[in-house]
Length: 271
Image 1: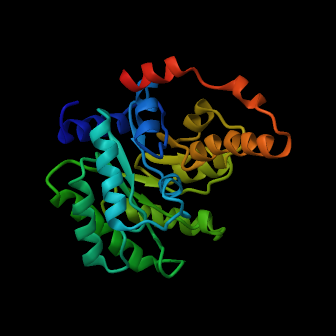
Image 2 (image 1 turned 30 degrees about the vertical axis):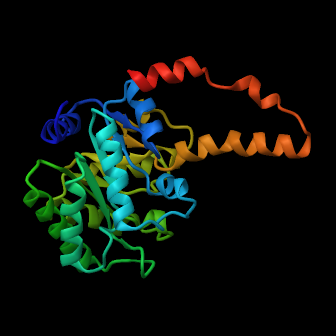
Image 3 (image 1 turned 90 degrees about the vertical axis):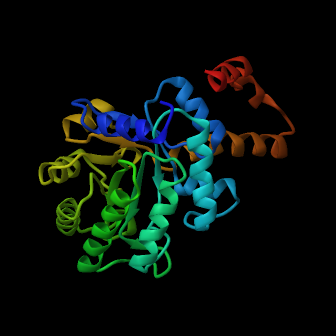
């Protein structure tokens, strides 16, 4: 895929597929190129993973940093990139619309906007949330390329155990113009099936939240797109922490026996 429009079109086709598919979340250019080389058809940024590369907590990056990150990943890969665009980087709707157009210009094929205010640390009221989704959908359409727009209902992820309100929001977001729906925090296949049965748009599920699940099970429950959020970043950090503790506590280097092949990594980076 040589240009942004082609990437957007390919992303739309993926969402129209009868089969569920995994969209992993790289945290930098190197991890993005490795995942592309392994054969994944699309990638999604992770706010947690990217913030970690800057030595910060989730949500503590600036608009300019996020846009540059998206630009770097889009330029380094030839497959669709979906941007975790948090809350659009503004509580103000007009500013959010402008920010969306800015990130679209980075070369991404899709983006998600959530209904949680990073500044106020609270879920936007229902009416305001719907207005924001509608504005975001309009902004993507005005951007000049066929961006895939995902609307996120954050209730479950933010400690609000209200599946009924989550479904109500997802239904309203679909009516407001979202192409894809997402409610991170679903913790069982039963919940996933309940949500997917109540909506008529492709649904993204955060797989690590449903312990022990498989792609086949998530698909049977109704999910179209399957992401992993910041879990891959944490999976990489786990052996790093383990190796560090071994060197400090035991003065040994047994961890080098489980290193990835440098040759394989280079081949994936070059593919």
